[in-house]
Image 1 (tube, rainbow, N blue to C red):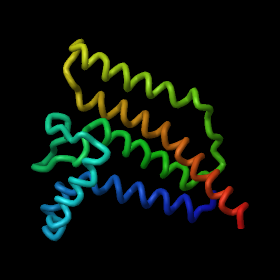
Image 2: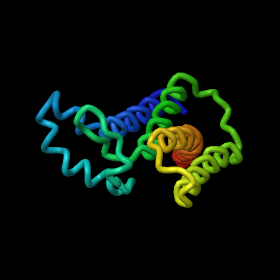
Image 3: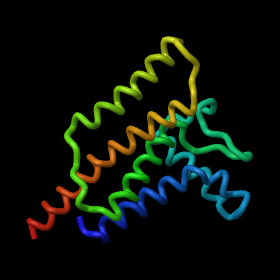
Length: 152
């Protein structure tokens, strides 16, 4: 994939990820306050936003839960890596099962009350899934671009 496409993908993920922290940015620029209801509604389409699972810091909270924030952070980190290296070999589908197993294990152990919900564990399992999941998003977009160019 060409650098311009990788840069656009990175910027889109960066903008999405930054939007998660809108409440924290409002104290620096109150003009963002008008966008908060729209952003909360937008992020509610991809996350349950249960108040007990949001990351609280310095008087603000994220617009997604700890796990979803981790997923987007992982995707952002992977997009940054791919921005500078397009020749990385994409792993097989089995690579995706490892973080899925960790995440499902965390969800199962929490659900059967083996331990209480941990934002740190949820964030880390999300980070692993987001990092691995980005490989497949990248591969799909790369194939789509190749297919579109072949049609022309």
